[in-house]
Image (cartoon, rainbow, N blue to C red; front, side):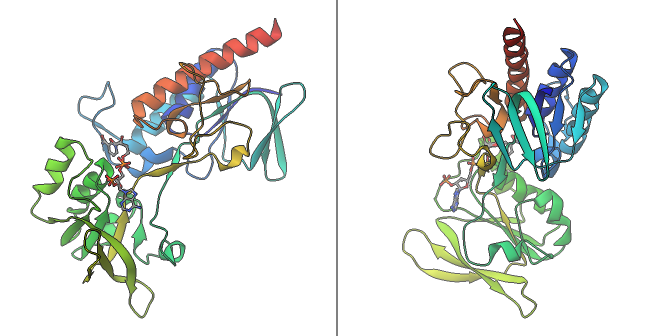
Length: 311
Ligand code: NAP
């Protein structure tokens, strides 16, 4: 029987692990399919306190992992299929053929990139066909060719700016006539000579060459419905994320967008013994530092819960 199983290895999961391990709870961390979480797909993190020169996302996650393991946290590269609550209040965490039992669970499973929902998207994300949600991972494959980014938030601006290192031209396609991104990120993208903004537009169709790779997109004007073609070799999605809560299977109350609902002022959910921390429950801030803060709170709450149960 584990004391604490932490699902997810972003800033929330690792911070929960550091605190739970230092409380001698010997937490078990389950990584899921993207060890290190979303920060492993970004470059410079300039707003995490303590790093005045900035820190690379993957390096920050590696340091957090190292710190958690130093205090006795264990890591297992498993993906959780579902969780069941037993009559005695403990949990069965199902990972394929294996069932892990635990007194508490900290859900820090984050969120996944959203796609437009156009036909054939899944196929186009494979084998370098040109559709991706990670400029850091795939940007370097598109040197000296035109690419586009879709979205109007900080991610879209950050990705567009990053892609100028490689691409000959970066089109930033946004469905409205105003960016959602912060002023500093927007300015950086819009002022770059390689970035061209395409306002009031979305993608209606991916245009493919004979090898099934993207050779352009059909743009649809969101105001008058007019259509045009834009030649690009890759499309980078930056239209937000969906919380990874599907595996909770009704065990935790979710809001209409699928985010885990926490009790006011806590990370505890309505289900005793289950805590939610980070992007999986955060519709507002979605920052590494706020996720880390929630991970800390979740570990402290789980520790108190276990002590109360033992009393
Ligand atoms: P976001 O702020 O939710 O922005 C998503 C963008 O995609 C919005 O502009 C939205 O358009 C657009 N969009 C959504 N669905 C769409 C659809 N179906 N078709 C076309 N466009 C669609 O997401 P984000 O940019 O990933 O940022 C998430 C959070 O992370 C934010 O809090 C952000 O500040 C933070 N972040 C910070 C940094 C940094 O500081 N280094 C970097 C990246 C992200 P509308 O504007 O019309 O809704």
